[in-house]
Length: 95
Image (cartoon, rainbow, N blue to C red; front, side, top):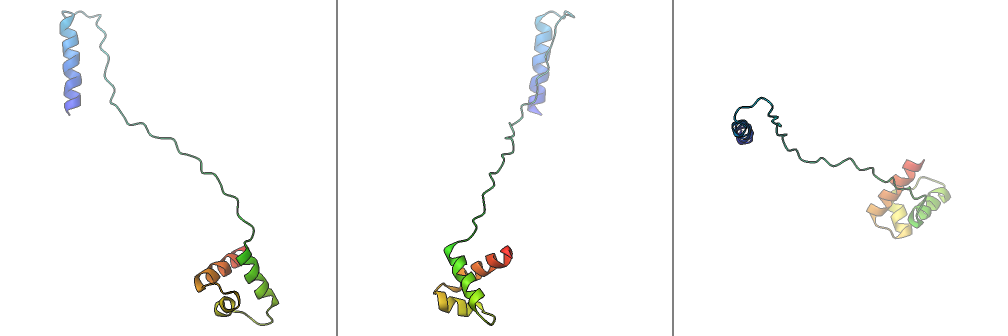
């Protein structure tokens, strides 16, 4: 609101300085806007094929004659349960 009144008062002052001549060109003030940053392109990371832990769990699963659960894998490898779960999830995702 204050910006609009300021703009009008400047225009009126500009008109009165020229004694009301018609040739006066009054520029309208543009409202200032904040610059919006352009969207940045994210670099796509290349997926790693396999890590050592993934290879170890994959070999244990392939060598087993029956199904292997996460507890048995963690006993054989020494990995904690969270790491085994992540590796198994990664292997399922790969196919």
